[in-house]
Amino acid sequence: MGKIKFSALGEKTFLISFLLGTSLLLLFWITRAEFLIIFGFYYVVIAAVTNLLITLYELMEYLSDVSEKKRNGNSVLLLLLNIPITFLYLTLFLIFDNLNTWPH
Image (cartoon, rainbow, N blue to C red):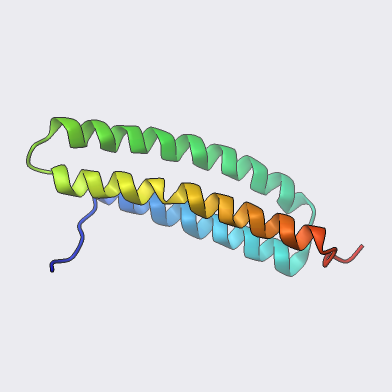
């Protein structure tokens, strides 16, 4: 079985979105800084729009370019993986918030 190939744009977009989102969540858990909640919200909105636009671009490339179908199709799937990751992070945030583990 060969290595799964992704388009450079799709792979970089996924990695940047994933790493920035993870970093923000971890930074919030470490510092408990409330401004990171607001910043994180705006980050999620901007990342969602960016990921959506790039996913649509990759999907159009997948549907129109015969030679790179596999690479662009894999990138679409990779970018769509950001959706459940975002919901997982939101769920974890809400669970920890409801446990009142944040210092007041």
